[in-house]
Length: 512
Image 1 (cartoon, rainbow, N blue to C red):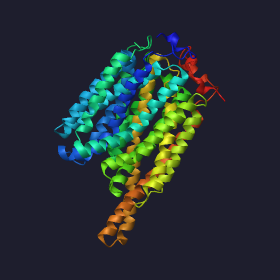
Image 2: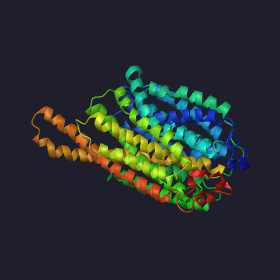
Image 3: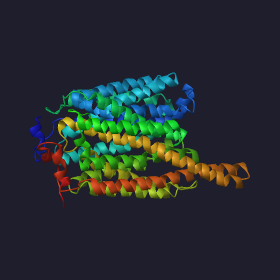
Image 4: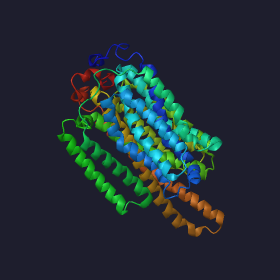
C-alpha cells in the first residue's frame, strides 16, 4: 500500500490492508502476552523465591531486571522497528521473548532468573512498539481505527488483571514455572499468524542511519530513572545511590534532548513529542499509570493478607476492573471517538477512575468487597478503558509512517516508566504511613491479637494514604488531557508531523 493510499480518509475497505482484522488478532495476542507478563510473575514470586533461594534483598530484581531492560530500550526498539520493518521486528521480538520465557521457566538459580527477566525485557522492548505501530499503519479509516484501538486498549488495560487470575491458577494448581512457560504458546501462535497474515505498507521504513549517541544517552537515562525509583523503594529517597541515579538520569536525558535537536537522523525526532496533542497524551498516560500500578500491588496484598483470599480468588476479585476496562474501551471509547474530541473522553475518563480511587481511600480492615471494592473497581476500569482507547490511537495518529515505531515506543515508554515510578513512589508513601501508624498505636495493644490487628490497621492506613496521592495524580492527568489534547484550531495539531498527513486525521478532532 502506497503512502498516497494512506491519505484517503473516506474509503473504508481500500484504505487499509485486506488482512488487517486477522492481523489484529495476532497483534492483540502478542500485546496480551507482554501485559500478562507484567503481573503474572508477581503472584508466582513468593514460590519462585523459595525454590531458587533468592534473598529478600534480591527478590525485587525479578521485577526490576525486566522493567529496566524494557523501559530503557523501548525507544531503541521503536527505531529498530522503523529501520528493519515492523513485521520483522514483531516476529523477532516474539521469538526472543518466548526463548527468554523458557529460560526463566527452567531457571535453577537466582542469577539465571534475573538474566531471563532482563532478556524478556529486551525482546519486549522490540515487540511492543512494533505491535502498536503495525496497528497505526494498517488501520487508516477513522471508524475502523477506533474499533481496532478499542480492542488493543482494552487488552493493554485489562491484561494485567487477567495475569493475576492466570498467575493464581498456575501457581496454585501447577507450579510457578508455568507462569513463564505459558508465554510460549502465545508467542508461537502470534509469530506464525503475523508471518503469514501481516503485509506491511510500502514506503513506511525509516532507513536513515542509526543515531548511536541518542541510543546510548536515552537507554542510560531511562535505566537510571527507573533504577532510581526502584532503589528509592528499597533504600529510601535520601540514599546516596538513589540521589545520584536521579541526577545522572536528569543529566543524560537533557544531553539526549540536545543531541536530538542537532543530529540529522535523530532516534527520537523532537517533532514527535513537541506536538501538543502527543506531548499531552504521553504525559497524562504516564501519570495515570503511576496511579494505577501501585494500586494493583496494594489491592493484591490487601485481598491476600488482610482478607485471606487465595491467589485464584484474588485474581477473580479483579474481574470487575477488567469488565469495566473492556466496556469503557470497546463500548464507550470506540463509539464516541469518531464523534467527540479525544480530550472529552480522556479527561472525564481519568476523573471517573479518580472517583473509583477516591472510594478506595475509605478502605478499612473490615471493608466489604461488595459495597466498597466492587463499585470502586468498576469505576476505575470504566474510566481507564475510556481514556486509554483514544490515547493509544491519537498518540500514533498523524505521524509520518517512518516515525510510527518511535511514536509507539513513546506510548510504551510513558507506560513502563510510569509503572516503575508508580510502584516505587506509592509503596514508599504507604510504607512510611504504615510505620508511623503502628508506632503511634502499638502501645495501647496489650494482647497478641490486638497487636496483630494494629499491624493490619497500619497496613491498610498506609494503603489509603498512598491511594489519596493516586487520586491527586489522576486529577492532574485529567487536567493535562483537558488542557493539551486537541488544543488549538481543530485538525491543525497534526500538520507539523508531515506533508499531507492531516488527511489521515479522523473525525475526532473536528469541533462539535
